[in-house]
Image (cartoon, rainbow, N blue to C red; front, side, top):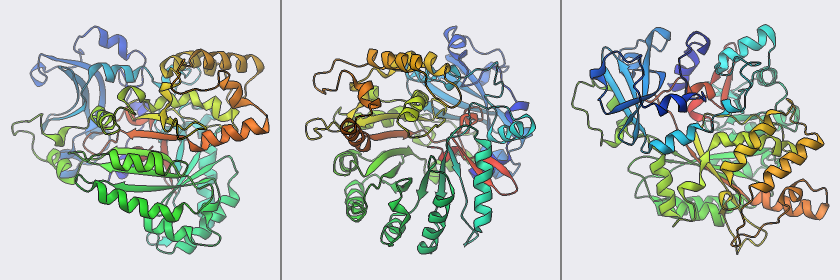
Length: 529
């Protein structure tokens, strides 16, 4: 339902708002603590509330219950407002009243997050289409071929539809059209195999695609646990190709933590037999949250080297979402967890369940990933565009040193000052050409910035010349570096937007798009990480 919503939404070009979540001017407007002048009816918003940002959303009752659709005429003004120390999304509908959802429980945390907007890196004078949506990017490129800076990182490609496999020629056409959209950049192709029953045919399709697409592009393969195990048992399994990253979705209900962890452990004992396999595990939780200690211990320690990405997503249950589909004339209860999508509470739960091994301060907005772009290029890992909305996800990198028993699963923030690194790196990255190739001066500046941000941490000893260590051509050093990189993990908290909390301006930063034959590109949005 949500993908249909996104595929039909108009372009941002026709709907520019005075202030957007990706705008660096947001902080200036907030410091004045004045309500935005566009709010006409002061009775709708409490006096103690400050309007921080203006965006657009949809009223679920109008769009779905009354089936009015989601075209431009049915967009609703939405406000991001401060109440006490909380941040709320207020969707304003004249017919059905206000829809109110808490999106953050800490004002300072929310505002600091916006400081990491990718717009700080992008040149709006030479590229005025920064906030275009995926659909508008395609149209602009086809008209004048301009380079667009916020192109997606991930592209969804269909290989199975209506209970049958899609013809190879159509699949290749989709891939070719996708690569035309992303000029001078690599992308990650994502393939959904959850509904496929013929695993042998799925394997043949994937091996065919891998032989066609150049080596710089990786693939995410979404499968159920059972189908992944079936695929792993084939003699010519595509999983032997290190460009394939299987993605498993695990639902973790409250009260079922031990059973779910045990089932996960048993399944992974089979997958461990595949050499160089690196897996993405997506853990879906709902309120009231489950305990995370046992499953995180399994993934961080027992399965390090096999599990590369640990993604935790909070998802409202259908019953919780359906409360927004009812009339809002009833008395509103802001303590109801159905109207709470605060990611900070999930970060605090991780801090508690890891006994401070990973704290809230160890996480940073996923948009910080933009400073990784030149490092990935240096390491020969590809030339990627990593520029999501800063509020879409929070991440940390967990490092395992060579002596993994002494220093296991250490957040990178204990070794590097990430805030300072972000500040130091911005002007350097701005000076890079589109291909991210570094000249000697830029390489030297990069090295200085990196070393300036190293922390003097005796508990986690690292080489003082770590940058040279990473870029070394020495075979022995390269092997050690590769071992550390292969064993590092990324822990990501994905801040999912569902149908009741759509922020159409934040959506312009979606990291993924979906190519549909005959329709072109649409944003994948809720499945972007």
